Length: 207
Image (tube, rainbow, N blue to C red; front, side, top):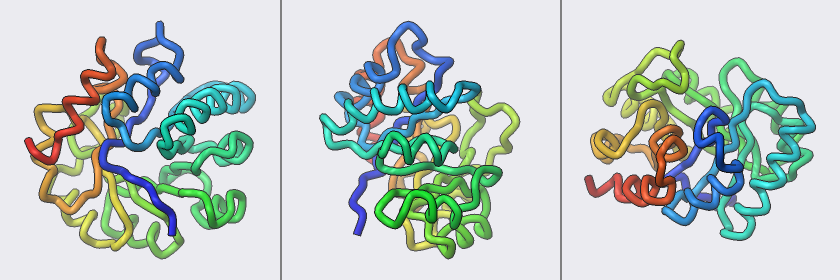
């Protein structure tokens, strides 16, 4: 049985806190209470992804925090991190499992009940549901809102994490939806005080 905690899931973004190396951002976030890390990079080479991934892995290993790479199954294999998170348009879930093996964590993005059920059937370890609220990180994504989030989360038995526009002032609305955690990008990594922002969000169930 894989053990991981999705409670406060931090997702990096290369456009945020650009003056701070990503591994330092991750350490600040973990110190503030982040329980799971996803390294998300766009438009870099495989070699660069692997190099960044190894630096982030060293920090996550130090704190015992699971760490997955977004989209890039090959980079995840080379880095030997905890696993990968794949979207609906990325590598097929079953193929990703063949490449990474059964011990690695594989998360899948799901915006509908049907996508969630398929991800669970195909062997995903968790699903990421969203975008819940409007977000500047992915402007072309439709929002699903709190009620649809609840339906998707409760359609499967595997853990789920909500993502999309989640901040300290709206995270509390998600507390009774059946999700296991919240995934946060800019509200943590776009903050001038990454550790403080993570600390504030770490009490989201009590808001």
